[in-house]
Length: 242
Ligand SMILES: [Zn+2]
Image 1 (cartoon, helix red, strand yellow):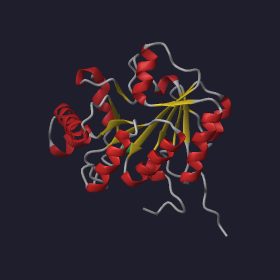
Image 2: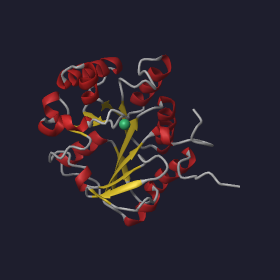
Image 3: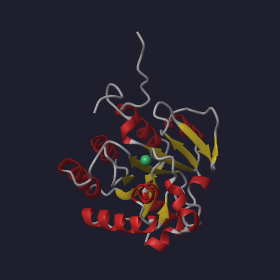
């Protein structure tokens, strides 16, 4: 009988985070990274823990429970225009409040270039409006934006080519190269964004053919790991469960 790959069960990801703690890693949010970096006070071994909520708020809550059990923090990036979830639905709003109350950071998972193209509106106005809406909705002050890679073929990151996060009252964009952040180019980046396997970049350069799971990189003791995971990737029994 074929075995289902077990890398992406909730049980597996929980044990991978646990292992990171055993290696002595401190697991922090994106805005904590900016603040600690500014103070020149970064711990020796850190994992910047980024979660992009692409499709499933329910699974984001599963990750939140895992993080809370382990006593670690993450930055959860939330979409406003997804057809898969509505942040103001009864269940999503309840989950987002729980994420906020547990002390995690909430950021904006931006689709502003997509919005500008589809709606024929100005991307900058879209961003400003979205930040006001998400801040008001959750009574927070968003400090960071991560650009979502969607289905339009456009790159939401392009918006930031000639703009700075501070122009919008933000501390960072998740891939920005300004000195205050510059995390992607100055870290070991590990992501589950290929769904069925991991990928990694060393200081911005892809490690071709290295699809080892997150925990297998821990023994290398990279001082700064930038970890990006998507709740949708994880399951208890199989990928199609809700
Ligand atoms: Zn995304």
